[in-house]
Length: 197
Length: 197
Image 1 (cartoon, each protein chain N blue to C red):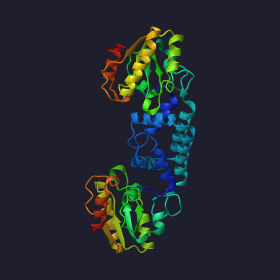
Image 2: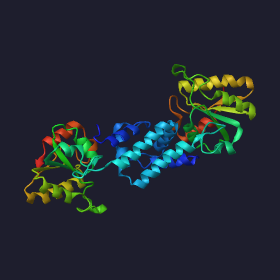
Image 3: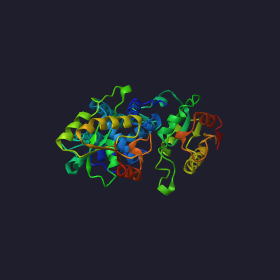
Image 4: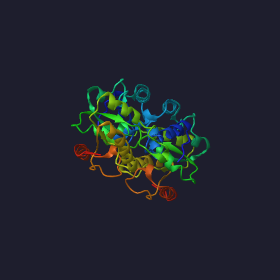
């Protein structure tokens, strides 16, 4: 399905960059944009540019923020750190109301096949936080995939000699799923059933 | 699921304007934008602005185009007009290789409940084309929904006194579906089996 109008074709191609968007969906999005009034298109574009310009990583945890330190790090208990692979995982975990600690975003998991070693994810920064804030517990909340498990085990081994309690979210989260899509009840149980590793 | 970072929240809201996009999907899109490099974001934004600025309606058929007259009207046979409700329907019909005529986009269908009468869709423009180009046949290719059928019948009644042959795409297209999603074989049969109304 090819468009005959070049600007529509180009916009369709751009929309296919978004996750899970194929050509047909991208085309519908492009048509929607053209049907929007100019003011709405401008505010759409401004939102994109604004998000790209203003949002950066929190100096402490690596989550997205538009302030120097993110809102969770500003008020959370820095003695309990929950380690996740991506910012989107924090969004899912924040539904668990009884967690009052802070997060640490690795920005990836260990994946030797893709050349992702310990230096490619934010492990060094985690170690620095542990000595700086006298952290008492680190909860490993990487997704329960092969790579997520391996990353949790690797970091646990690094932290054990430092005298830090390292826990893993319980296997209430079913194997092989992406953390982003786990329901809140399962996540709440996974947090409360966490076990030392 | 609320974001704590205002620019992400705003961008997420903007993405929910796109057809079929809920909050979770919109959020994934927003995260993807932030993860793209600045150059890619700029070309994304340029594509949106370009499409909005350069694309307008073809003076003849009402389809989207970035030239004065669309590419189909430039080379098609203006004696056979295929009438559709939206530009996206042309994209579907253009897969039917043996149609050499041109199109006419109504930009809607008759819908009394929503206040869409004959003056709100491009019927007047269709009548003008018929006298100007000595049209021999008008194929009514509105979607086979209640409103689409009613619109086809209404226009057929208007055109009959002018001596124009008016046909309707055959009921190979199953009732109640949106034209955009009909497969090519069904569409090809619908075109070849068209019958006078």
